[in-house]
Amino acid sequence: MKPNINIETPYYFIDEKKIFKNLKKISWLKEKTGVKVVLALKCFSTWSVFGLLREYLDGTTSSSLYETRLGYEKFGKETHAYCVGYTLEDIKEIKKYSNIIIFNSISQLKRFYKEVKGLSIGIRINPKVSYSQYDLADPARKFSRLGVIDKNEIKKIINLIDGVMFHFNCENDNFENFSNNLDYISKEFEDILHKMKWVSLGGGIYFTKKGYPLNEFAKKLKSFIKKFKLQVYLEPGESVVTEAAELVTKVVDIVHNEIDIAIVDASTEPHMLDLLIYGTPAKIKSYPDGKYRYMIAGRSCLAGDIFGVYNFRKKLKVGDIIRIQDAAGYTMVKKNWFNGLQMPSIVVKRLNGNIEVVRKFTYEDYLYSLS
Image 1 (cartoon, rainbow, N blue to C red):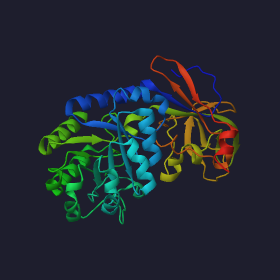
Image 2: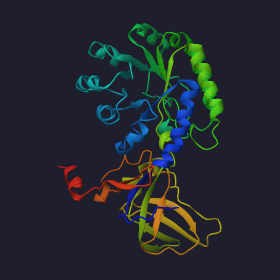
Image 3: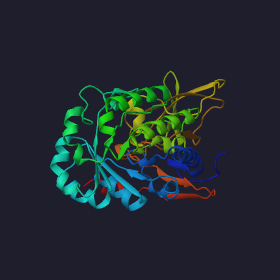
Image 4: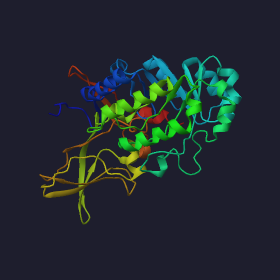
């Protein structure tokens, strides 16, 4: 049942019980395999629920100085730092917060090694295999700048590093593909892996998705760990929070242009940007037997501000609530002030059923995000 709450729309509604379902799978996997799991803050950084996540995860991993600091201050435990390109100023700050630092290139490793040699140091490797349905997100795409390709160059600096990262998946729910790619990495980089203390297999593996062969996944990881005798890290984002939140919106107008169009008080570009980036429809419940077909659209000035087309069993009217599912990952971390639209509040339903409005955004937030 949906909570009977009276909160001004739009708002992101995070349900801790739904997060807990994912955490139980993660906890089982950790127990069976010995892997460590760190939250990818680039996907989900809403620290008001870190209290729950901290009980089951081993720490956080980041893509920038600010994410590293957030992980250190608000999550604690292990704090992993990675960035495609550090500055010296970044490094001087990041080394205060992180226990593992991963470099994207050998040139950056050499440049900053003396600054961070007290930390556990790693390098990102591009294995030239990957899984992604979108070229935009494919880490092994042509001309990719993400990670080192030349094994011989890695061997030259192998005494400077403790670990390596292979981030080669994006929303990969295909276990067979993951298994084959891991076999390839095991063979192609065997001599390097045998000299490492740890390896991160990155994120983008949809192992908490319903129907994913978790037992087979565990066996694969255990075999990999047994072969190389190192600590394996996973860096999930979506797999931690998948299906755990909604963007709750309200219909503010209905217009007609060949199709009925319901305009809601939210928008794709500022509130669910990935829908636009990847050209995917929002997850809104549609009824095959529904007689009433509507395009659900946002209220920005962008002509393509469309959530999708859906069937409903009743006619929509102004004031009706439209719930957009799976709205945790890559939403709150990407929200922006396009058109100066009201930013959704962040609401959390705790494990005990209590509902908290943990953040409301005001005109002043908009004003001072500018200059």
